[in-house]
Amino acid sequence: MFVPCDRGGGGGSAGSDFKGFTLLMPAVSVGNVGQLAIDLVISTLDMTKVGYFYTDCLVPMVGNNPYATAEENSMELSINAEVYSLPSKKLVVLQIRSPFIKNKYRPFCQTLLSWVKSSKCARIVLLSSSHAYHRDDEQLLGTPLRYLLTPDLEKAVGGLMQERSWKEMEKVAAYPGINDTEKVLHIPGGGITKLLFTESCSKGIQMAVLLKFCSEGDNIPDAFALVNYLNEWLQLIKSEVNTSSQWKIPSSWRLLFGNGLPPALF
Amino acid sequence: MATFFGEVVVAPSRAGVDDEDWAEEAREETPEDREIRRELEKKREIDVLWTVKSGASTESTTDEPFACSKFIVAIGHNAAAFLSSFILDSVCWEVVGVVKLWNEWCRTSNTTTVLPTDSFCLFYRLISDPTVLLCQCSCYVAEDQQFQWLEKVFGCMQKEGLQVTILSTCPVADYKTQESTLTLPSPFLKALKTKEFKEQVCCPLLEQPNIVRDLPAA
Image 1 (cartoon, each protein chain N blue to C red):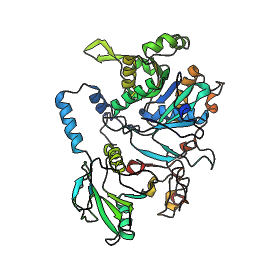
Image 2 (cartoon, one colour; image 1 turned 90 degrees about the vertical axis):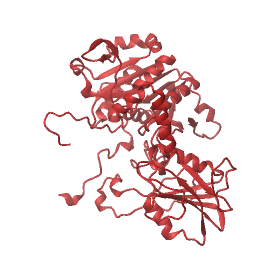
Image 3 (cartoon, helix red, strand yellow; image 1 turned 60 degrees about the vertical axis):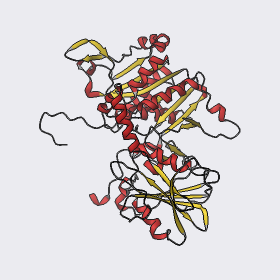
Image 4 (cartoon, chains in turn brown, blue; image 1 turned 180 degrees about the vertical axis):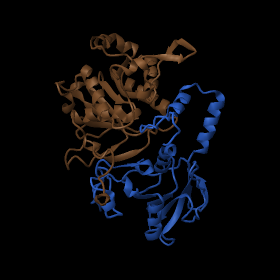
């Protein structure tokens, strides 16, 4: 699945050695918030592309470098699932740029998790979102950000979350109105989030999910909120008073809501 | 969408997340479900049929990949029509293959005599240089079939020294630019190229944030 980039001078093996790294990745979820947040991370930390996923699970797409800053670096092709790395922070990032093909969620999750195991990543941090309209009365108050930890990671970092008063994603009744005692995890609009989380739990993989309740619309503020939430924990950039201005918006975010207007309109 | 007062409508997500389908997939499959899914998958399989020298059509078997130096693929009615009008003729080109597929939007057959209005996907070879191949894909290849098309077609070719050119069209309305597309002189050409392509490109490169999707992207 993972195809490393050719780097001159035998950098190939270095590109695919992620022992002890944290894999940061998005779920394709409501508002594409996870993906937008990942764009901010890659763009701000100026991460290097080290490879891509050759997969039949995602709709194909291709374009020129979405993080281009100048003429010189704007001509590199970019596809739907690419891997970037920042060895100084032991961080490897997967960006997913297109929706899943029907019936391909499970195969993708399985292949991804076996790649995580074979490349010896220490843990996965999944950025996701969930439909805001599914919140209950209690969830409507307070922070819209939630986290989830697999049992293995809970032991390691559960305390950190408690210190920061982070809220764990609540479980909901499996049969609401009929039987309120049996609770299950329900992440509407979260895409592969729940599947990846439950699979990680059963395979003993350390995974954290960070998600935000949101709706479709202009999801840029949601992306900023999520990436700042992530930063509270991973400290990827220095968090100062006005953290929003610390993140670099990639050039591909231009024209998200359409072209310029025809002058003849007025 | 206008609905009567009080009706709650679930808005589709841009992320393509469909909860109902999703919940179904999460449930365990019964043997009947598996059987149905297998049948559907078989129906949606793509067959690439190559005409061998003798003129008879055979299934593409695990033969040696054939030598190919240039492969031109035209995807969509406009691109296919361009090739029909300006490049293809029965003197210099011969039909060497056909793709047979079915999906909800179209069906192609393994006949090689087609009308421009049919759905078809044909392969041609330049008689004077048999390593030059051309493909006219004038049918819709569904999302779940695109990868298969790619693997089956390219699986038959030697990829060393191969130059691939993909011709396709997109609506001007989809082009993202600072000005309005109303004032753009259209039609216009844009290109994407891999870093291995060293020749001169005949038109400007596709600017961010525009992208290409589906079969041309695959």
